[in-house]
Length: 521
Ligand code: FES
Image 1 (cartoon, protein in one colour):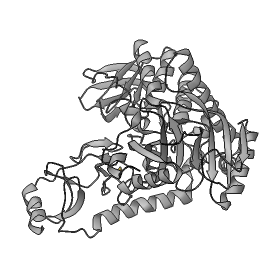
Image 2 (cartoon, rainbow, N blue to C red; image 1 turned 120 degrees about the horizontal axis):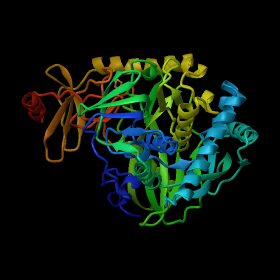
Image 3 (cartoon, rainbow, N blue to C red; image 1 turned 135 degrees about the vertical axis):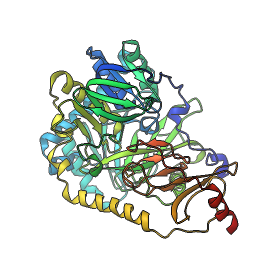
Image 4 (cartoon, rainbow, N blue to C red; image 1 turned 45 degrees about the vertical axis):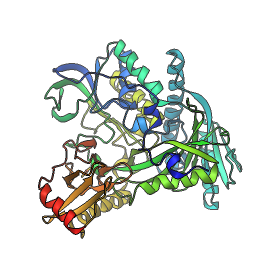
């Protein structure tokens, strides 16, 4: 067995999807622009929605803060499936059979659309048909899996109950969905973005939206000071960056999860798997120039609330070694997902009072099919004024607005973070080694300190610029993460991920901080 260093854990985290593709480069917005529909966010939702609207002759522009397809879309496990945990029984019981049917149809249609586009456009994206499995190691999930099989089957999904799966460990039960798929998301979406551009679409990168100034038409302002005027606006920025209405910040929370890409001695048996248990461990394979990779995922936690997040990668390594003979772990990465209170996405009109403002968010980790479903729903709402799946995805649906118990639990947790962060006892004497980030009390203020590999200290005010929660250090990704709504900042305070729009304030009294730290050690 190789030493740990040789298995990739001395290499910085890097997504295989990004490492194995060449980034398209699009211009920064440097002049004012007028379009029919502006789309904020160049992830899978924004690009696929722009593509579908463009095919209908609608003039659109995608405005991306960073580079397209490098956020959650570039850090997914890329399973194309209508199997989203044990969801169908839950929707049927808590909402209605009609909602469960709409959700099944939307996601099964998304699978078919991805396959159709890849075929029609001859996109080589490692697309392969696979079965998807939810398995359990515990007796208490067996009845739930049995029920899920029956409900899914009644909705037209080809589902089967099993007591064994092809993975090399015993289980208590599993449900298998057939005719599902997996792909390389960027090999599918980068050509789709090119296709959209070549057909008259517009993509602007490194153009962060800093304000939405006016409604009807909407006027959005980017960090270059340029304006985009649009009759209709779609916010597909992952966590919605618009908080003047809709109260999304009270009904979405952010979760991080981890992936290790493993090279193993054994051949992978095929299939996409996820545990029913809280750990959410998942498995799929991926062809690569370096041979077969097995993607082992899971270890989720709320953003900004993990302890030492490097432990999550170590836990995946342990699971991988228990399951396979691991030869190397050449890639590992983490991602962030927007979670909703009733477990279903918010896609449609931003609120019932905003007929020309739309949102697509809250995919609860099932973004590959939900985003394509979202693109189809938004296209239908914009072109036809209605979609066959609009009710279950409606951001203003009853369960989205009145999940009172969960709402209180989630927000109590956020309030705790807000207060605990402010009043927690902070060490005044700490050692900060190269590569380490810590929170100290300097000059009586909560201060984030990171020492880079060259020994230089970088210090920030750890107050989140979104709504003032206190940030925590994410050791695995070397970022300052917000426990309230998931904003993330680099060690020098730049926004990595919203909803925050502004960078962190810097703590400028470096001499005092350096002296405090050095004097103690
Ligand atoms: Fe909302 Fe930080 S993301 S307060």
